[in-house]
Amino acid sequence: MNKRIGVVAILVEDKDNVENVNKLLSLHSNIIVGRMGMPYKEKNLSVISIIVDGTTDDIGALTGKLGRLKGVSVKSALTQK
Image 1 (cartoon, one colour):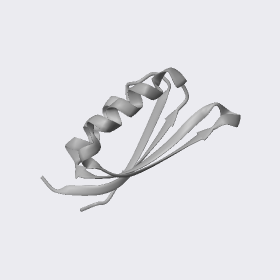
Image 2 (image 1 turned 60 degrees about the horizontal axis):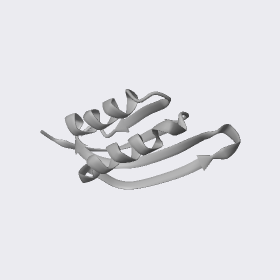
Image 3 (image 1 turned 45 degrees about the horizontal axis):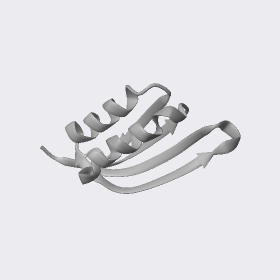
Image 4 (image 1 turned 120 degrees about the vertical axis):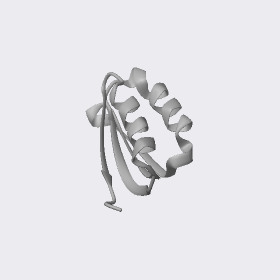
């Protein structure tokens, strides 16, 4: 399977799931190239962006697990090839 490079945006509105998000990111660290996280205190949420390099299956597994967490929204954009 071909690898793709992409960006994943994660919005964490439920602070109770921050630890779960971090655990999932650690479990999938083999496809994570870089990460930037910023708390947005005025809006009571955290914004995390990660750069990924992996197969669509690997990236989909990560985003799917993240998206199933309560109060967590995920969007991704991947290269075509």
